[in-house]
Length: 146
Image 1 (cartoon, one colour):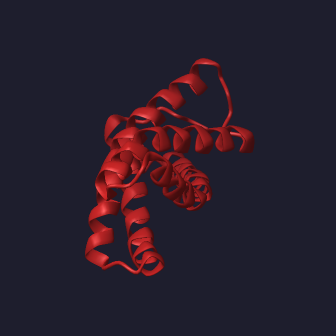
Image 2: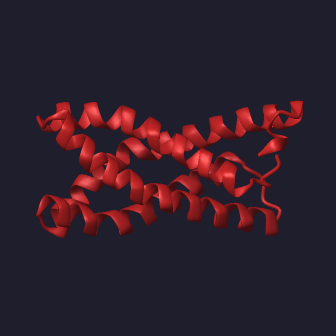
């Protein structure tokens, strides 16, 4: 599978990831936490902006490592990708969550772990599906313009 993605495609992939996550998480978290859609939408979008930047940086570096060492996108590699991506996002996001919600780092960490339980399988599934669709498009010559 080819991992030569342009910056435009990386941004498209990351934006798609975040938009779908916002569409899923905002109503779900509003319902779970008994908060307004607006309040949860603002919090979700702030975290999505952080995650978007992390997504572009992390995925670019991850793909470079895979290409350099000629590592295939196996199930184990995809699991490592999801764990490393989300672990980095927890390290970046916990301080923001604590500040935004005016809670302790421990409480922010626990909240983030709860959200992580959703994002681990979501990250794995999204990137697997993206790669499958991308490979089919590249094979047909559709994605060569990016």
